[in-house]
Length: 221
Image (cartoon, rainbow, N blue to C red; front, side):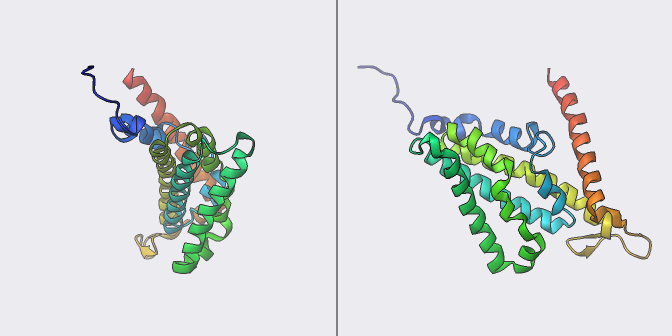
């Protein structure tokens, strides 16, 4: 009789969460291959909703939820979905979770729903969500797909929060509608809450990320 131990149940996750790849997946989604600063995806919403920090946070949470849950369902159904209709199935799955989040906002946070306008609904066409479902969830087990969805959602949310922080602070002197820079001595820069301010903030952030990343890679060699 062989003394070898039986194989772990659950495949890759039997060796630990995501087969020990959890940190690597999170690092890649949040920083190494950030969907906005590195891949330049989801730029429209990053420019449109970041005039206030609160909007940025809620939009980031929306994408984390949709990306994680759609990745989970796509991964669970990956062996049962015919290849000829896989993209239609992916869009239907993504749309379902977007509608769930949109209805939640309308029911419990109506003012925010009005503030974000159509941009929550447009997550259905967001390249980040569709890209992760097609490139990752279809090829990996459910737990890894969920972590990948959360990681890319966090990477997207982090960029939105940073841009929203500086645009609201510089543009109005407030954060989350709380006065931080008093009108007694600070003159708000109105350009930062308009479209040019969004382009400027995003451009500086992408430039900074592309400056830091190569230096870190050189230091690790």
